[in-house]
Amino acid sequence: MHAFGFDVRLRAPERLISLEDYQRAARRVLPRMVSSFVDGGAEGLRTVAANRAAFDDWQLVPRLLVGHDTPRLGVTVAGTPLALPVLLAPTGFTGLSRWSGDRDAVRAAERCGTRYCVSTAASWTLEEIAEAGTTDHVFQLYPTGTAGLSAELLRRARNAGYRTLMVTADVPVMGNREGERREGMGIPPVLTPRRLLDVARHPRWAAAVVRHRRVGGRNMVDEGGVAAAVRAAELQERAVMQAELSWDDLAWMRDGWPGRMYLKGVLRAEDASRAVDLGCDGVVVSNHGGRQLDGAPPSLAVLPEVVGEVGDRAEVLFDGGIRRGSDVVTALALGADAVLIGRPYVHGLAVAGQRGVEHVLEILREEITRTLVLLGVAGVADLDRSHLRPATGGHASTDRVPAY
Ligand SMILES: Cc1cc2nc3c(=O)[nH]c(=O)nc-3n(C[C@H](O)[C@H](O)[C@H](O)COP(=O)(O)O)c2cc1C
Figure 1 (cartoon, rainbow, N blue to C red):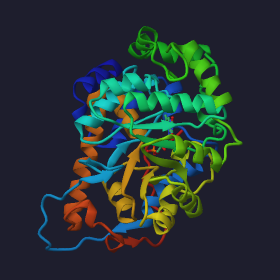
Figure 2 (figure 1 turned 135 degrees about the horizontal axis):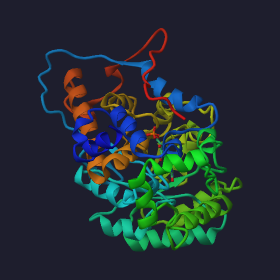
Figure 3 (figure 1 turned 90 degrees about the vertical axis):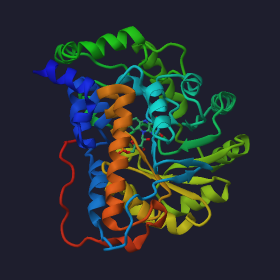
């Protein structure tokens, strides 16, 4: 039954009709160690849950008889027109979910008229990913304490044709992800008989890890097998996560990067303002999907403050908990210029590679379109606070797949 379900899904991901279906399906094709890494969050998962619950704080209020049938979904991000207001967020070690991860993701993004944010901790090198695509995407930098390593990554990104840089600043130290630690996903991974049995129950996944050696950290080390990925993760912890990084480091990066630059991980209006004063073209309001500081506010709750502070002079991108087209619409109505999704496209990759990611984006496109028509809005550019009403009373839980 299990194997039968697996095959059916690979041939026909179209049978999955929501992003939640993709999450469930991904849990079936991945060993628990890996899904705990993808779906997990920091400590008590308060911020993971809050990211979803924050959408329940807003209701969407339709306008009747306004005569719009094909709403416009296009936005411009970093000077690039996109066919839909959703980008693929940077995710490290994506090859763990599917060996072809970053290559598939960049191609799916292009097919759907959007862009991929390539993580410093990608499972393919930034050059390989650039070659797999046909246009420029976004390079995400984990700034390093060693200026030389950052400078080298930026030089490589420029040479490979990336024109937009996203600097992630919310990982001064790795978040305490107890769920994945409980499943043995540490540095190095800890395999017990139970975990080995679980891996053995996923022979396709295990064979791909061994055969393709695309686990992660390929921008840091030359190989991609498990041992090399552990080396990359160690290097990342030592060199990349530097608690002493300061605004001077961001200034230095701004000076050294000729293209557009965004600061990711912003949860305060004053930080957004400082980043823009320093020359950033935009910010990403994000709490890293609840994977870093548990207890951090849901990114949706701080989005209006950030938009109020810098929305008239910089782009404001948003991520954290988007699982529906109506979530995208809510974030845009609160002032975001576009949103990013993380886990949902990794689920798409796990289930069906490039086709799975395209389908995840397609589901969102359809849901956004339907939501706009129901709202009576001609296009995403017309969304504003007048389409929202604060919800009163208790929250209805929107999460039906439990987190790790
Ligand atoms: C498996 C995984 C790996 C991630 N790796 C990175 C990373 O390398 N760099 C980064 O800036 N953010 C990383 N993130 C955070 C995402 O970019 C994004 O902020 C978050 O996933 C958004 O929340 P969502 O998953 O609810 O959409 C990662 C998230 C996940 C789930």
